[in-house]
Amino acid sequence: MKDMIKASQRVIYSINMAVYTYMFLSKIDNKNLDPNSVNCHLESFLTHARNLSWFFNKKKQDDIYVGDFTSETFLTILNKELITKINKSLSHLTYHNIDYKPYWKIDSIAINLFPNCLKFLEVDFFSKNKIESPYLETRIELISQLKEIIDQHE
Image (cartoon, rainbow, N blue to C red):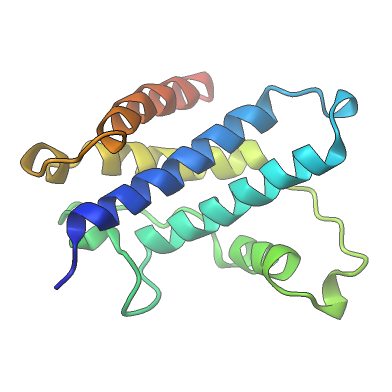
């Protein structure tokens, strides 16, 4: 049997990491920071964005899927080409990527991803199930942060 509370906490964690790393990357002056710090945040953002895209578009039988929490419809958010680019750049050591230096449009990724994240955090599942600390507080904070980010891009 699926533990939906634990699954929801895992999704909240992934949304939190995507939002946190996006906020870090969107507010920095890259010239003044250690490139390793920027790269760590960028890779984390891209990995969580990809994982959340899969969450909204079930790929495998054992994937945590938004449809397990709600019957609401969620639009496809990140195209297949972008997911492949993330996989090739971050998840595999291939000859293809030894000289590959992609330009990541993090604002575009965020604005495609975050409305679905906000919609998920507001589904009835959370009013019908007890989510424990710190996930309860994190969920409430994320709703506020996501609304602010989305409003800034409208």
